[in-house]
Amino acid sequence: MILEFFTVFFSSLCGGFFVSKKSFSPTVLHHLLTFSGGYLLAVTLLHLMPTLFVTTPSPTHIGGCVLIGFLLQRFVEMFSAGVEHGHSMAPVPAHCCVAQLSFFPFLISIMLHALLDGTVLAHGHSHHTGSNQSLWVGMILHKFVEAFALMSVLRGFSLSFKSRLCYLVLFSLAAPLGFWLSCCANAYMANQVGNTILAIVTGNFLYISATMLFEASPEHRSSKRTICMSLLGAGLAAFVEHFA
Image: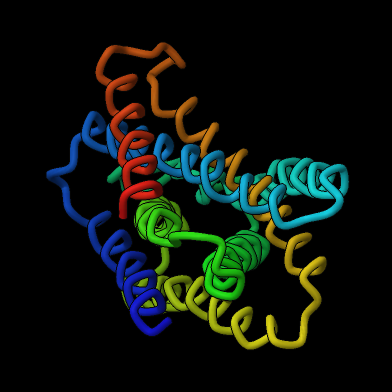
């Protein structure tokens, strides 16, 4: 538990710090987004969804919750500028969508999303349904990309460096905090309630990973490199899931 807590926390911090570097080209960022999207999609399909449907007596209920999570993420995107799936991952001082955002709804939506992310790791700990390594690595990648995009957007709000750093630390703590709170709550929470929450977050991940793959291709045209990067990400997830 301690290892997961700190690795997820520091992956977010690292992703946020890297946005200040000017050496990252758009091509590198697109490849990182595609690789992460492929990995997260594979983890969702190979780990989260099988875990849900194997451990529940009501597959229809779980399928409905996955759908709710998918649509809920679409709603959250209205306030978050798509930061949770790496949108606006660009080393520029401003972002075209920032002028249309309200700062606190944006910040609250991102924090809530990160808290929910942490509950997924807690579910793996409490149910012991197999290896949790693939999910853990996927969360590290997801938080890195998410923090990178978050800091890119925060720069567009004309905040001071200290303010951006404080918000980055708060964001980096959100997923580990959700993980810790869920680990504590699992002792008092019925399995059906835990499965419902996990199904909603799985729907979120399904939307996010698919959108990451879709947005990583310029003008939504896939190239050989983007296809290879997505296959590498998915292949790594499958390898970790079955052999780690």
